[in-house]
Length: 84
Image 1: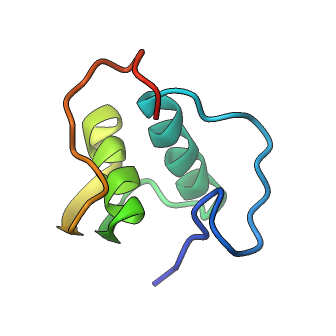
Image 2: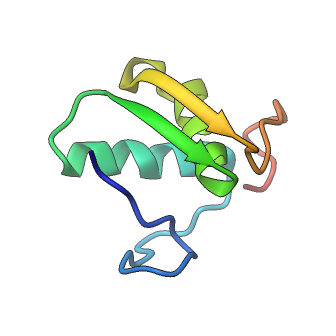
Image 3: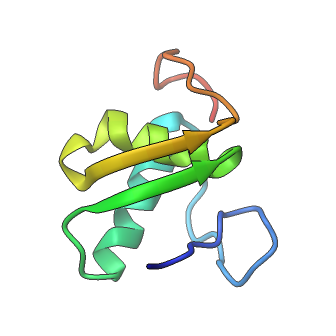
């Protein structure tokens, strides 16, 4: 089990490239999986973590084995060109 620091939240993560679109958020979380040498994982996300987990499930379906979300910040199906 791993707990990932959400970028922009308190923790040790450092933003190395900006997140402008929802797809950027999904790519960031996929890169975290790469860093953990994991092809896929089960995700539990609450509020902003739910947002990131949902975007990963939409844009990188093969990386999400299971998804549990509680009060996600958004699950909007707006276009990826919309701001994250």
